[in-house]
Every structure is written in structure tokens, then in C-alpha cells.
Length: 106
Ligand code: SF4
Ligand code: SF4
Image 1 (cartoon, rainbow, N blue to C red):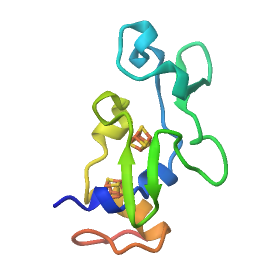
Image 2 (image 1 turned 180 degrees about the vertical axis):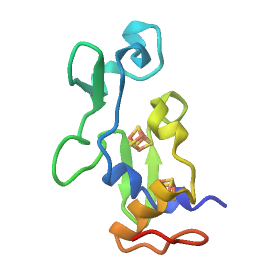
Image 3 (image 1 turned 30 degrees about the horizontal axis):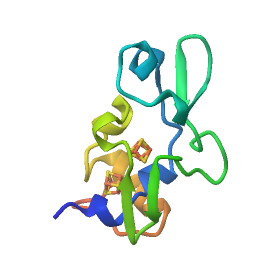
Image 4 (image 1 turned 180 degrees about the horizontal axis):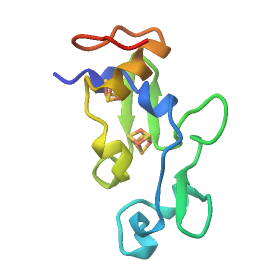
């Protein structure tokens, strides 16, 4: 089973910014209501530009239960982040969770 369902570390770690063309209002999938404007070309998941970071689309508790409410509509940076990748493990380690697989990062 994927570790993602009881993790959510990436959703608490990164500014999730992407092209406005991914917004549902622009023909994409991401609900615009859950985003904020960065500039004319870029928007961001709300909550990921703040400290502490927590995406508004996330339900659950870090390290225990994580559910992306817009999983099928999530933006490209989320869809491209592979479980066990450097970015994944960097987020997990930052939040005190064990890395997945071999972790050579700092
Ligand atoms: S940090 Fe990795 S394991 Fe955790 S939810 Fe993100 S992709 Fe999944
Ligand atoms: S859109 Fe979903 S996968 Fe992406 S940061 Fe938010 S909760 Fe996490």
C-alpha cells in the first residue's frame, strides 16, 4: 500500500505553484476556488504560500492520515512528485518521517 495515505508531508512542505491553464476556469482541472494568484501566468494552492505550510485541499493529520480532496484534479507538481523520490523523502525527513527506500539526501 502507498505510504501517501498516512503521510501528507509534501503537502506540508512545498509551495505548489503551477500554470493558470491548469485551473478549471481555464479549461484545466484544478478548482480555482482552492488557489490564489501569484501573477498573471502562475497560481498556487492556497495554504502552500504560508508558514506553516498546509495545502487547503489536504484532509487528515500529517504522518497519520492524508487525503487529497482533489486527487484526480490535482495540479501537475503534485501529480509528478513520485513517492520515494528525492522531493518526497526530503519532505518526509523534514517532518520526522522515515524515508522510503534509500535516502542519500541531506
Ligand atoms: S511525501 Fe512522499 S509519501 Fe508522503 S504523501 Fe508526499 S509523495 Fe506520498
Ligand atoms: S493538491 Fe492535493 S496532493 Fe497537492 S499539495 Fe494539495 S493536498 Fe497535496
